[in-house]
Structures are given as structure tokens and as C-alpha cells.
Image (tube, rainbow, N blue to C red; front, side, top):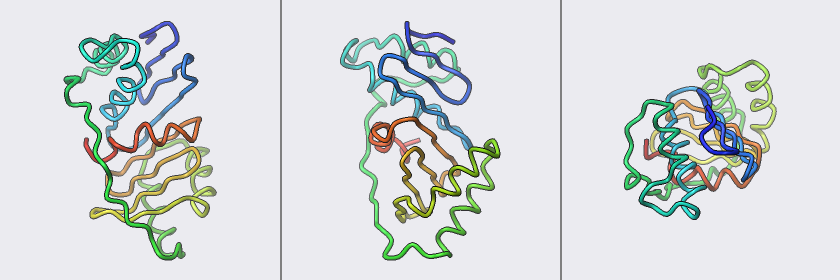
Length: 159
């Protein structure tokens, strides 16, 4: 669904031609994280009262979310001392549990060794150049620009 001149929202993500951002998710529901990202992208243009692309995406996804809920949280990331085979196996197992296309899983699996891996209370989280794999929440985010990671990170564990 076209929500803005260059913002297309689809079932598991969105693509924005203005900011040249594409984010998709696989696994457990992450649409609120995507809504927060859309809100952040367009907040400067629309203000905080009524952000049309945010409202349009909410309607498309059938989600109730107030703009006041878009408040990021700092993740308590604890780096791992070593990236060993055991950690990689855990992340690969989490990846296999997520319903994603085989080519996406293969891409992420190959990139896991070079990713930043952190421990959280309820699981591991891996930040790659173009993905975030959250073992604790059972979801995978794929994006086209490394800077998108900073856009979604504050909301990863909020919803």
C-alpha cells in the first residue's frame, strides 16, 4: 500500500524511496518496531501530533498504537568475550526457527561470523551489516543500509 509519495508499506515491512530505506522482518510480529521507525523518519516533516505515513501504516497493518508510545529504550548490551562455535550454533538454531525465505537464511548464516554478538537477559542478539537477529524475540530484521540499525535498535525490546 502506498502511504506517502515514496513510502510503500507491505505485509512484513516497508520501503521508502525518499530516505532510501527498506526494512523487512521475519519471525514474531515486529510491526510496532517498524511503525516506530516510520514515525522517526517522518517526525521532522510532520511534527509529533499527526504523522500521516505513521497513521497510514497503522491502518494498513490494523494496529492500534499512539504516537506517544514511540519512545526508544536503551538496550543493556553486554558484549561476548569470544565468538565461539557454541554461540554461532545457538544463533543458527534461532535462525532456523524463523520462517524466512531460504536465500535470506543462507545470507544471514554466512554473515553471522562477522557480526557483533551481544548477550541480553533472554537471549542473544546479532547485529550484522544488513540484519539484526534477535534470538530472544525470535525475529530477524533485514535492511538495505547499515544506518537503519540505529533507527530500529531503540525499539527492539520494547514490543
